[in-house]
Image (tube, rainbow, N blue to C red; front, top):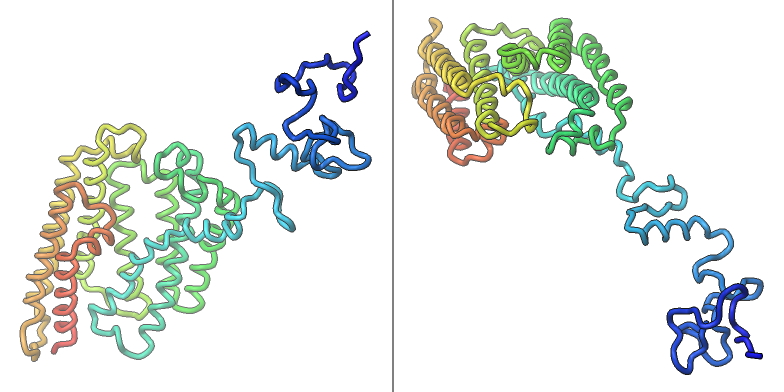
Length: 385
């Protein structure tokens, strides 16, 4: 009668372990030694079966399951003490950061156009103008943020299939869709109400019109040929008008013509660049671009640039019956810088690299210097120095 090994488990054949070898007990492990049971581990103790798993302790079944999932190649976040289980530590405060990103802080520079009308009238540094313009800037920024939040919440499903837009906070899941709708709707209600209380009804009416037009754009107008260009251009024009409305400054026809067609020039140049860069890439851009031809968009930005230059030149050459007493004719000289700026910007439009206007202006040193020279001469002309 063959004597059984004292360490074999019931129901398991002797010598079945794959690690057995000559001179080694069949069921012993690499860590077994003299005086140590073959199936026991370093963490076994009183009241624990000798063959228990090394990491299994009372109350640790959740950790064992977590380790098993990680062993299968799954990325599972460990639970935090005092926090929500399964939430990575990097997500702390992620909702607020996601809301801020959805509000597009980089686009807030466009709202600086609220100073355009007061600057053109020479009233930028008089009285409490800067304080009132700062308030108008904040209110317009709140309206724009409301539009971005509602737009991203509405387009969340479509953005998830887009190679770039899928990284937006709402599409990526950092900001829940109901939260984006709630915050956007709250801003859309509060901004015009505060404008009516702190400024005047004209500003509140303009902000309400801006919200209605932009929300209609998000729902349907962005799919209508030509109308989409007009809506985006009108948004820029409203930014330039709101400062004058807040301060009761009358807006001249040349100001409206130059600002409106200048905005159309930049918007159509951006659309043209998108159409050129993403031609033949299905699903990589807005569907409406497939209905525009590059020739048509080129015609639009060339026409808009010509009208903007003409409107500015007519303003510069019109003295308005007031003789200038400045050292030099700054109004007329500023035409040179304005035309050079338009021509320089047209270079990027023609190449198909005129994306966001602020990136084009700040990314090209020559264009930035021309813009500063124009601002200096324009300021001297308005101040009549």
